[in-house]
Image (tube, rainbow, N blue to C red):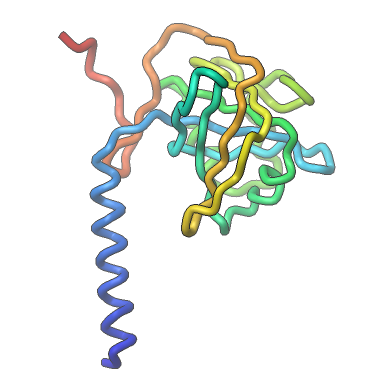
Length: 172
């Protein structure tokens, strides 16, 4: 095996181990939505969502540089982060695969600039782009929250160790 072949094997093992290690951090699950230039609704499942600042109100999330939705989100003037409830696992799975019309089975209402807000979520954060930063094989997007709402009271959809999880109960 060539030196390059050895390096590739090491890189593959390292990446898998790193992914497994990062997967030990439990995250909530969101679907980020926007409208493409042609008016078509776009949505993608994201668990790389975090608050950044209260003043000004900023959030961040990241998107793979290989995502077919990247151009739509880079050009978007508005987007929404829809925080999923534990019974919305099917929505997360639905938006994590490519399809012709991902919004066909999903109930939503139009938010700012017509951006879809998915029904039944725990919260919605309607944002304008604040900044984009290169982040390796992802683009880090910072959004300024223009409007937000809390939805129904329910447990969140959680992702941990490569699987969806449910919270076991309240902490002591």
